[in-house]
Image 1 (tube, helix red, strand yellow):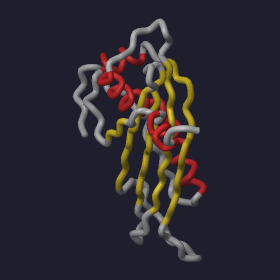
Image 2: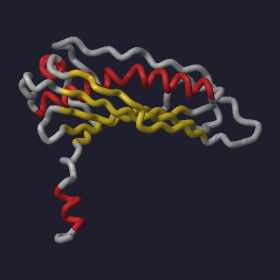
Image 3: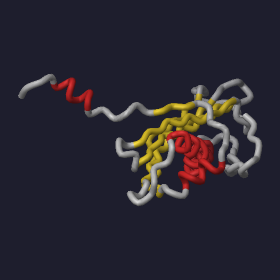
Length: 175
């Protein structure tokens, strides 16, 4: 065998994923341009975590139903022919109980979309906007269910996330 095997691995590496912690401003036309072309191929759970700092055998009395903090991380990429778009969306929430004993819930979902050969390819800026708005919207019900069922199984106070709502075109969004 000739050549350096490590260099062969490097040339086969996919393009670097795009990671954004802040969503671009909502643009309904951009989301629509991508949404009209793509078909969702799969939505799958790729990671999940629940942890609580309350390890006392008698437990503590958790009473918080309002998250202390929460966040969404979006990482996306496209295939070399850009006919497959994929993203991993990570949702995370931290709660505190009355004794300041936090508990954390997080889950990551992979969504893969395909664009039929007959359809024109969307611009990267449109894809990024789509991933931050529509892909998050697609994954939101799975996150809601995971969060609610995990909190329930842990014997913590019931917490239900609101349903996700897409802003209407022209609507001003707040951070």
